[in-house]
Length: 444
Image (tube, rainbow, N blue to C red; front, side, top):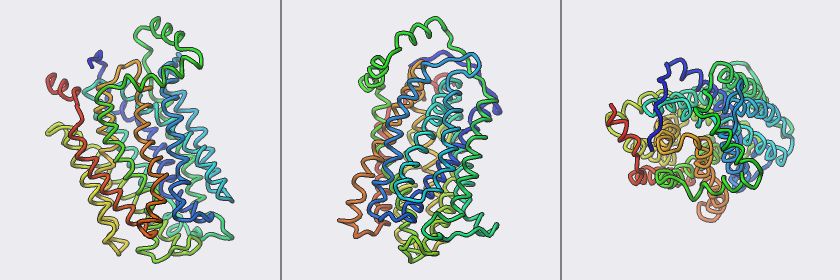
């Protein structure tokens, strides 16, 4: 789909518009690294973890298309289109991050996870549309790569925080009377502050262009008013999805089953297989939780570096080939965890996972952005999130039963299953049609 050319932005303009993702991933990484640990500390059984995690993908399923639709139909002369949602989401997410580690009951932690994930989605979804709004097709891969760089950096620091508090600041890492360890509590306090400040940076130092035809924009917004019209448009978009989006949805399904498996089951897998503990109240289990933070920091750091290498490789080959290669590397790396018994060696497969993560956050969105109408960018980016959260919901429902009935509660086998799904997702990339890349190549 041809779109009007947009002014080329400088490196620092792209930096400023992407910096908020540093804070968003700070919160997201703390959630991914510590949620299973928090649930287990508060008494959750291992085969119930995936069900308890359902709060996260379900909120994304409900929130992102609505926020995308609303942001498409928003314009304020000072706040712009996407930035109001950045700001509101950051305030709510920061509040939730201060509440999460103070949960005293399992049901409280699950409730706050709903609140936290909904808030993260409010600010995160418009950031994807922001790249489509402001960058020309030739800069969009680089724009998503910049977001991936900040996602990687935020993920590294956030994932390491419990270990930093334990090893360097002498904070207790052991639960007292069943409460969340102080290392985790303080990490979430830091995360809530960083989340708000990083997003505020983008709000203050990025500008948005008014709709090219304001009269047409206002007329379309007026026609869309009312709950009935909004629901009709949101649901009707399923029937109008571009072909490329449908093809990417299949790839996304198996990709995000793999990622959900990793986030939910890495902590109990490493605790049992390497630290020889399944008791969440024990020092060994909590030490495993810290080490998983280091592992996740490794894949986040690798993704930050890979974010700038993948666009160059894509220019030499294609975006599809890069995504296939990266997912295959990540999938094999996840599978290999089964054979590792040394905690230091666990960092090696995280390199492969980091390469895959960089591509997951860059290539599908770059391919998709070139296939979307400019005036529906936020909505379709939100709708695309269905194919991120639906596989997580499916995984959340079935993985617990698979773990209990087929894998004898050996959670590392779920990681192997996730790795196989990621490899399959890589080869399914071959079915995706990337017309925008062909157009860029002709113009080069």
